[in-house]
Amino acid sequence: MNTTKHLWAGTVAAMVSRTFVAPLERLKLEYVVRGEQKNLFELTQKIAASQGLKGFWKGNFVNILRTAPFKSINFYAYDTYKNQLLKLSGKEENTNFKRFLAGAAVGITATLLCIPLDTIRTKMVAPGGEALGGIIGAFHHMIQTEGFFSLYKGIVPSIISMAPSGAVYYGVYDILKSAFLHSLEGKKRILHMKQQSEELSALEQLELGPLRTLVYGAIAGCCSEVATYPFEVVRRHFQMQVQATKISALATTVKLVKQGGVPVLYAGLTPSLLQVLPSAAISYFVYKFMKIVLKVESTCIVNPIKKNSGFASAS
Image: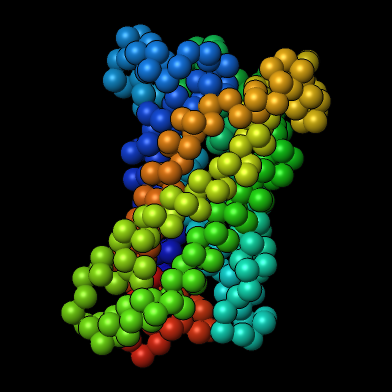
């Protein structure tokens, strides 16, 4: 039951955050997948004129189907890996290296389980994707024309990108969180939460507080996106290749650089960052909040907030 609640907290976080930033996600894909050259304002006008307001949420349902399990697995796996490393070390707190290691393991785990839906979504928003007839149609088309394993196209660059992405995303957040909790202000907050445990609302039980949770999540997401964005561009282009003209991820990278130089590997970075900042912030916030609401029990050996406090920790 605790595992189910843990996964559900991540699922709700993904649903809320992805729906909120769907328009920015759509703009990013226009740059990455279609090679759009217009500026943000012009591209926004183009989509609004041709597809209306709903055009900005095109593919969002598929995105939620992909992101919800991906994000829930991410959060759950990170807490699990982190706690297991803590048990193995027998110490009160993981080192920064172990935080990054757990994050990298999370990226690999979630990618292996969720990449088929990501591949289908990319095919749907690519040129000609409208004619495939939605998720089921795109699935059947790929199976019939390219085989089952076409759903795993780009698995190598995906793992190469998601391992460091997970490491940076979760590692940076945990480092920021640890620094605050060890500060004088953080210790005072922990003491206050222990003393007022029975009277605090779910928002007040957020160990970093609502604003700091949002800010730290945004910073972690920004660092992760900048560090791994070129892998994302290569992966998207790799997924769109047909079997007859398929080339390796490395060859795809070389081809892209030859065509547009190194800057092409950062095509769409600005709208991507505009999307990642609120998405990462909201994801962490909703996840931590839902863990408290659902009373997800922590399995950490040492939890400075939960210990003797009488309420569910947000760690």
